[in-house]
Length: 389
Image 1 (cartoon, rainbow, N blue to C red):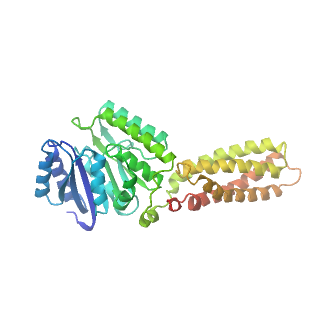
Image 2: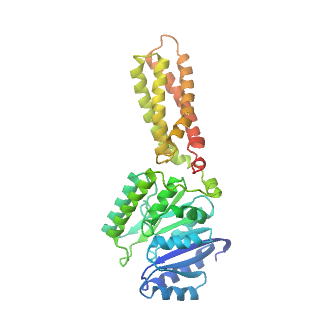
Image 3: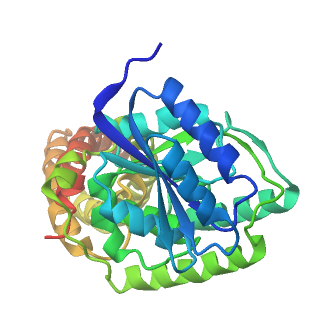
């Protein structure tokens, strides 16, 4: 028998449009499941999007019959519009939503919201694209979904599944982001996630079991085209530096640098490429300059490229905002490397071979690399410093 933890509240929004066929069974099943297994307080909100059948009547009946269930009616269609309406007024600790067909296995719900309640993450999404997910759906939806998410990845997104109808967010995070989310329909999810990534918020992913609903009301092709148009709009807005939002202090303070387990491999790859470029440039310049001059020039060129690459790939900073500041702050790492490599070269005996010179600068730069990583991680690209002032 579960023990309820009544100090925390999770709101589950179920957007519906003309769902009289499945509404009662789905809400009853969801309510029974949460009552039996969910260890926190919950509220189910049925958000009717201007249905023209008996959906609204059934929603009101369910709200009257079942505790912790309420119904909200909107005069206009749009899943994003429904979520905006409920989330923006919610007093819960965490807001979430799921599709009325309950295609996603409900056993994933607690893993979805637990990191948000603990403060470990800011948003959470179910993903059907993880290796451990079990998904049953037709080839058409599979192709469109994977193609869309591949496009998002090519544009720099790091979350794996933008379209799964199984998401949650800390309420204060959602309410801080909502003013900048323009879409009112199916692209709402993607726009919210892209905006969250831009602000360095932490997105937790949960592999889910998912079974396609053959009677879904979603027009797949139209939705995909609308998503592409929305994506183009968001990219234009981000390129022009729009969507600058003040973040609550509690949101900013909760944003910690991403774990080293993810950052170190990317930093290492950038470091290897930078080192190879440095050695090639140093060897080329050494034929025309003293070792000290060749080292300084080669190190300066590769340091600028290294900071830019780590900015994008290791620490996930997208866009031109703050790029110059990051380079200027990263210059401290350059001077550390220059000092150490200069000392290394000074210790090389007169008449030593070119190979000894290279070994000296490589060892010195290896030490400087450790300093660079900690400097970039703790100071230059620390998410706490990346909010808009």
